Length: 191
Image (tube, rainbow, N blue to C red; front, side, top):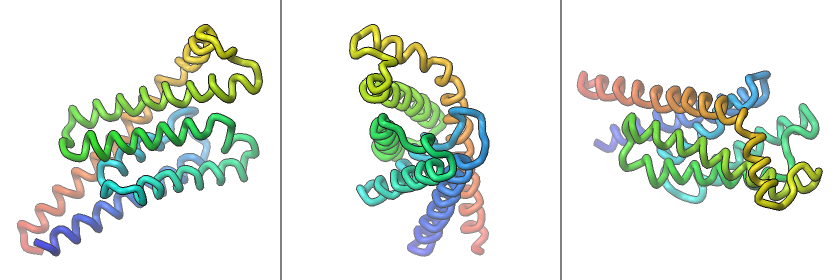
């Protein structure tokens, strides 16, 4: 039984590591705007990794490192004034996986968690644009009208964000399901 738990931990670690590598590479190569695996990786990591501060900080650290790589290769595009709100949204999404999906992982839960992730990122990150970045360049005044204008301007980005979250969540959780099934077959065969 202990060997089975160790194999499962190794498979999970390999899959999460692959997700992290995909995250970094996908952010450095040309891609469709707002079509990236970051939210899906945060949800997957929260669901699959042990619930602790170290794993949350590791996941956020990978995102910060990928932002640093973007900043070094494309100055001004990796970091901006509302970035803390973006990181906060990823921490919340990690929490959805860690506390919402971990105990009841199924198709419906995965879709609901992914939809919640998309909406949380949209609400939190665009609130940050309105609160910090929008004020710095006077795009959005600090009024209810300014906040509504900020969210309205962000609506075109919601669709590709949702589609990428669904796609990459499907890839990560689907790969985990396939690996888990293969592991069960191997164990049953006594290999």
